[in-house]
Each structure stands twice: as C-alpha cells, then as structure tokens.
Length: 192
Image 1 (cartoon, helix red, strand yellow):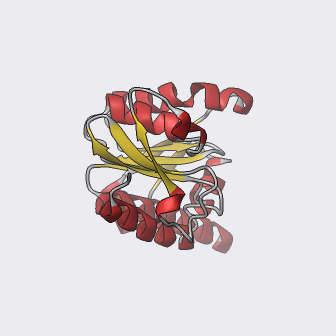
Image 2: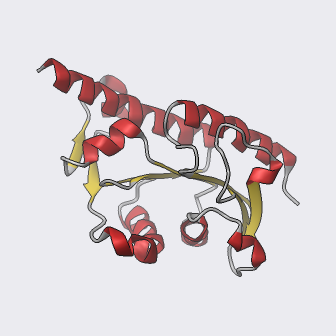
C-alpha cells in the first residue's frame, strides 16, 4: 500500500521534470523514503508524464521480495543511498539533455550564470569507466561519492545525474538550476 499524498507529490513532480527533459519516457527514477526501512519508487515501465499509483511500488531497504522485479532498474541504488545517507528523503536520477551533453566533452562544470555559481560553484563530472559494468558498480560508487564528497548531486559522464535531498522542493530546484545553467553554457558556445 502506498501513501496517496506521496504518490500524488511524486506524480506531479515527475510530470514537471519530464517536461523539463530531466526524465525520458522510460528513463529515470524518482523515489521517496516513507519510513526507516522502506521507500516508494517508480516501476520499470512507468511513463513519467502519466504517473499514477500503479506507476510506483513500495520496497524495503533491507530485503528484496517480488516487488523488486517490478521496480525501476535504479531501485538498488536508491536503497543503498537511503541505507547509507540518512539525510536522503527524496532521490531522483535522470539524464537531463544539456547537462549530459556537456559531460561528454568536459571533466568539470564551471558555472558562469548567477544561480549556477551561487548554488554549485562548480561540479566535477565523474567518469563511470566501463559502461558495460556500470550497473554492477553504480550503487556503491554513487553512494560512496555522495558521502565522501558531502554533496547532494553527482553528475556522471554520459550517464546522467543523481540528486537527493530532505526537501523535495530543494531537489527540484537543484535539478532545474543545473539543467538551465548547462543550457546557458551550451547556448553561449553557439555564439562563439
């Protein structure tokens, strides 16, 4: 049984994030921790601009059952983050177009616009190494990076962006500023 208020909140935010190209049609994940040992995450077949209660599943962070078969491929990494970073209440993973495109040729995002600079300053772009083994390694590598660097956002070359926060509005704000700032960088490059 899922909490209707949490489902409604995640559904509305999913639509907004989909419209801003953070999520693709079947690409991405959004979750919310609902208690100490469980969270709600989108299913593997969720369509982010049409989310409903059927688009989510309620999972335990400590044991896997049949529901994990229906969950997003990102479920294991979300569970690992929730188990290791207690400040995480909401997590999103997406492949924002401008941010991800920028990562293909850069090792660092240096923000020149006001909101990007005051929010992030700069962000390292992490090289995932061998793409074929990424999903075998990502839960540990992403969680370790977020913890060791005391950051709530990780941008991965050619893969996408993980972001977590205690406040869903702060999470969405970070995502929006990151993508808008990278869009400005890309537009500016076209004027050069």
